[in-house]
Image 1 (cartoon, one colour):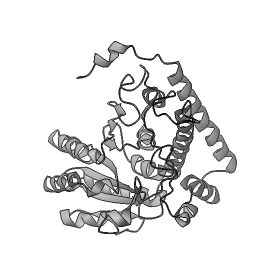
Image 2 (cartoon, helix red, strand yellow):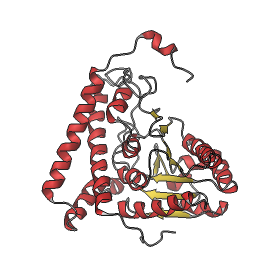
Image 3 (cartoon, helix red, strand yellow):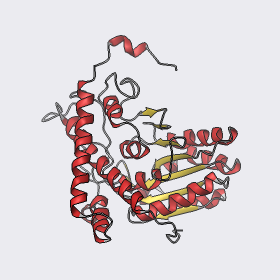
Length: 332
């Protein structure tokens, strides 16, 4: 059940969240353009500077900033196959991340991981292309933090489709039994690839599943940054205080297809037309409430565009790995 927003962000926190949402959006727009290079008019996944599949997070930016604003470098975050917005909010270096996506030697893993397997040890950030994998990994990190006597918390981001797997139950059950500093963030964008939540899930809100583990569960409606901030603050403070895990499900949107090239023909027209860009919504509110001026917003947009441009240039100029790189640094 959604609780009252007794925890409100400061103006500095609001500016930080909005700025990182802008960076994420500009980043995804540029990566989407780069990904399609060499793949049109005849689509070939192996062509262009970024081969493989690409999952963009446009529309889900509030989920990342509303949670990560409460975290530090010691806290662990494990994201999904749609990870860029979360990596940016966690502070992963944009240059190194972009080089990794481009498969270059200056990347986070020297180009071996690609966009679905970003790994930053300094920021304690990772992600996985395996659906639902983040939950078990983050519970393990939460266990490590507890055994080490650390004040760190572990966060798993996952999708509403992934929580129908057995790993979700097994991980949440252990997290509750062991009273771990763990928070499960479910990004409910209503679609698991092309399967709707209402046809795949027995209950309307996965946050209600928390009752089965004897832990708190909250549902945040309307992709609301303020609501996400408030719910995450409660859950993370609770975890740090040794009071155990929580589940937060966030009603968000996927402003494009499951992957670049997915035309979303399965989504009802009314749902497509009802989508509201969360960056526009937040920017308008910040201006209305005198947190930012229109000129300050424009400057933030330019700054975001410059950071993205610099990151893409860095990645493009980074060397392509030699063939023998495939056999190096496999186990470190």
